[in-house]
Length: 161
Image (cartoon, rainbow, N blue to C red; front, side, top):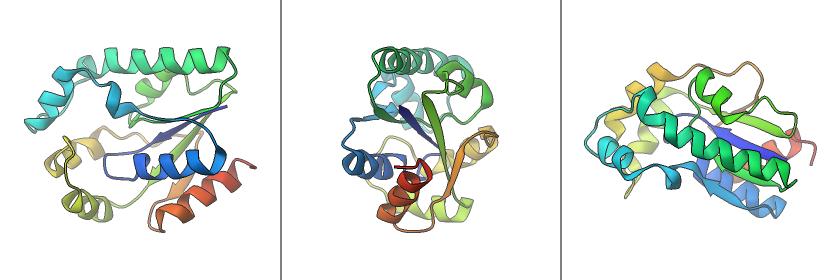
């Protein structure tokens, strides 16, 4: 099974993903690590990414998901996957892929972004993230207000693990 943790920047995809991976004994992959340098530079300049910017990145992640599914490897991938189009590109509609939406209020996420250090995604781009966000129809939806450990436990339980 491949679990894709999605949501806007600052919702806890990496923190929760690492905790969930530890709980399940699965590898964790942060989608941000696979952005081309041009995307990172653009976001660092406080410029939102366009669909054209995201497409090669999403295709790379989709290839990774395909490989894991074909090889029957369990994996957890953190990826914003904000639009329906991006989720289609990733292939989250496959039976072996579970989409988990980490959902929180704008105010909570903005506060977390303001407290975060050493990340290329500035809080200024949160508005563009929420503007791009199309909430998924077929996902496990988890509230991000509790502590990260509790969120990971909730996801594990909702997956039937």
